[in-house]
Structure formats: C-alpha cells, structure tokens
Image (cartoon, rainbow, N blue to C red; front, side, top):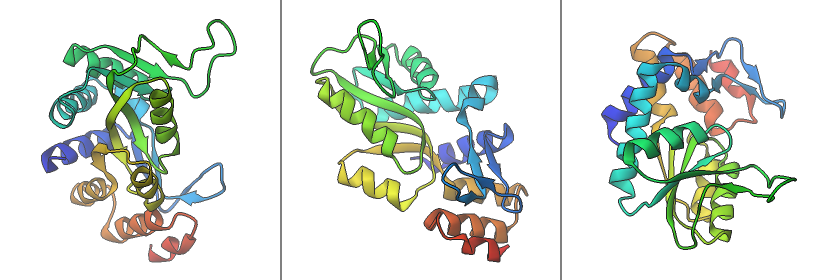
Length: 215
C-alpha cells in the first residue's frame, strides 16, 4: 500500500476517533484481555470527509490490486456499507455475506446475485485475528465464487491474523495499519513514544500484560 494513503487513512481514523488509543485506561475485550486500542470503523460512515478518503482508497486499491474483479462482497455487518459505496464508485455489482444463514425465507447466507465463477473481492473493515474474514472467503468459495483477495480498511498486524491468512492463502491489502497509525499519532501528539511502544508490545502478544510496564 502507498505510504501516503496509509497515512491519510490513519489521520482520518484518528481525527474522527474511529481508533481510540487509551493505554492509561485500557479497554477490556470480551475475552478479558486488556487492550490499549479500540477500533470502530463504522464511524467513518458518519463523517463525509473521512468517508470520501476511505471509500476512494478502497475503490482505487481494488482497481490496482485486483483489476480482474467482477464484484465486491462485504463482510457482515461492518463491511457492507463500504463495499456498497466502493462498488458504486467502480460501477460493479455488490453483495454481502451474513455471519450465518438466515433461519427463514430462502435461508441465504450470501445476499445479492452471485454466479458460479464470478471473480470477487471481499471488503472488510478490520483485520485482527482474521477468523471472520477467512470464514467469509470460505463461504464464497463454497458458493462457487473465485475470491481474488481482500481489501480491509485497517489491520493490527497481529501474528495470529497474518498466520491465518497465510495458511488459508488469502491475500489481504489494508489501507492502513497499526505501525503507520502509531507513527502519525506520535507526530500529531495524540500519544508519546512510550505509549506507542507499549501498544506495539500489546499487538505482538495481546495475552501478555507486560506492555503496561512500559508506560
């Protein structure tokens, strides 16, 4: 990914507080893990300026990295709107993949027209451990689609996620990443260098709370 794009997206996410950096008052995940970072890319949709930066970057990335793409498929629920807007920019079909099949009607898991053999790109908002993203890719492949890869808005770059994507042979291109975001956050005085190093330490081993001692 182009460094200018990475930084522009990172600046947008920080400006609208789609990414919260709070090492002094960490968030507690459902697993009980204490995290110094929280990401909510749904907030992009509420800010026209950030939305323009992100959606144009998604469309440009699809066009550059996956020129053979015939349709975009969003992940449910956070990727749906981003897939729809990018597909509109690119003038391509769009659909989305549910977390599980409906328990009524046609029992669809994939919504939207998808012919076997269609070359698709998955649009995801956030890559952490990559489990849900790979599940979507698997569902599309089972339906007969040819999944070219994924475009995500942001990735933590966690080892577990990278390993899972590699093992599944899934290509992911993220608009921005944790390292670039922390670089921008220090430059613009959101956090200091100690906090940035603590957050990187957390990313490298989320279950170990040793990062707290770096503050």
